[in-house]
Amino acid sequence: MTIPYLVLVPNFDLSTRNTLALKAQSRWGVLLDDADQVPALFELAKDRRLPLRVLGGGSNVVLSSDFDGITAIMATRGRRVISEDEDHVVLEAAAGDTWHDFVVWTVEQGFGGIENLAGIPGTVGAAPVQNIGAYGVEVADVFESLLAFDTLENSLRTFTARDCAFAYRDSVFKHEPGRYVVMSLRLRLPRPWQPNLRFAGLSELSELPEIAPSTVMDRVLYLRGSKLPDWRVTPNAGSFFQNPIVTLEEAAPVLAAFPTAPNFPQADGRTKLSAGWLIEQSGLKGFRMGRAGISERHALVVINLGEADAGDIASLAEHVKATVKARFGIVLHEEPVFL
Ligand code: EPU
Image (cartoon, rainbow, N blue to C red; front, side):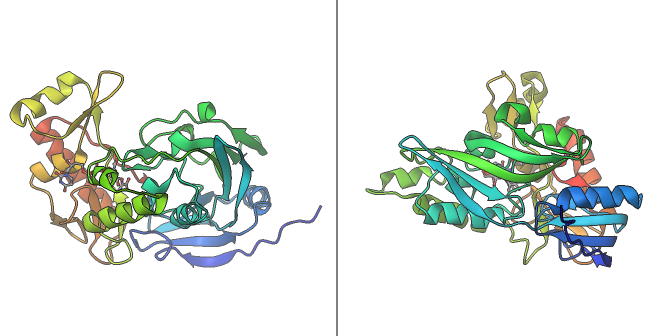
């Protein structure tokens, strides 16, 4: 067996490797461009007694300024068609592939099913971890399986959808942080393609005489561009808070005061409120605190005003949570992971 080649870079700068552009450094850094490097790296970290964490696109993390260990960046690439028949096509992508590039590739191949998820920052490997979703579609809807390295058992494991326990912005991987490293993802896209146009902003497309996955993708990209700040221009981590799913009793004070407040009844009898709406109604849209702020374009997005660190982001997030709790009695939960 050949031992995979690992190059550990000292004093590894992470400020360009997180979409919030937080000032952050790791004692060591390594790019993983071959799946075989993953077990070898965990072995090495164990031998040297160094903490090890794995990042994808850095679009859902709040990085602490200094990490006294190894930060590995998942950088494997590759996508392929696994099988095709009349009813489905099964596709596979490597964990380090950029999610949006993978979506564009599927659309270019004529495979519909994930076009509503275009433009989401991050990697393929991160997509199932928080079950990314937008415009009425979640990864869970088209999930076939994934391959992950189990760092506890030191072995590869295949996960079915049931194993992943997907829910709104949730999966088993969030409950055992650090245990699994996603290596590749398989999606099963149904045939013939049925556009999902239920979401506001997409329904107008049903009037068109002809529609292709690329039509939907282009509209999604337009909608995202018109609402959400681009992290390349204004560093951010997308939605910073999850939309709270609450009981009807918890929602009652909000809905009594604001009968038209956005709310989406759930199958389990609870309802999903809009965190962006709650934050805006709390007077915090565009609010600034130190080197961090709430976007003026979308109240769910925390932005780095320049030179912010994790402390600035955490203080702002606490202020937002306390203000919304005091105003509406609703508890918000952060979406990104503090590392
Ligand atoms: N709203 C406000 N003020 C704001 C922003 C939104 O009142 O500043 C209201 C809107 O008017 C609307 C409601 O909130 O009635 C929902 O807003 P939007 O359609 O923008 O969607 P969202 O619930 O805020 C979710 C996802 C997004 C995804 C969009 C579109 C979460 C936490 N966020 O946002 O995902 O793009 O739906 O499907 O579920 C992400 O996770 O990073 C992300 C951007």
